[in-house]
Length: 101
Image (cartoon, rainbow, N blue to C red; front, side, top):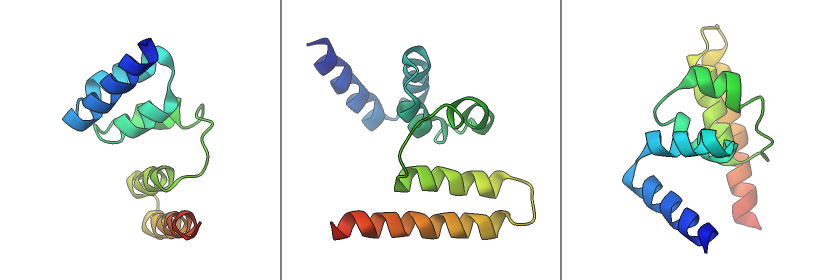
């Protein structure tokens, strides 16, 4: 029953855009998927880069590719736009692959 309540609360908090509450919950439970989804919407790039991305054991998803593309754009290097374009292209390939199944 507790899992059902938690699942419903997460859904409602996401729909209401309560990203701060979701970040607090994700930090307390070490749920990196929730943190990844919430922190890039706040945006807290430093915490996301230093604490979430290195620890997250997530499969390659279009959402992860989108966050990686945003990181590439926020990096202050000359290849940022090109890197972001390549990452977005890989994300599109993942979406098409999932759609084709």
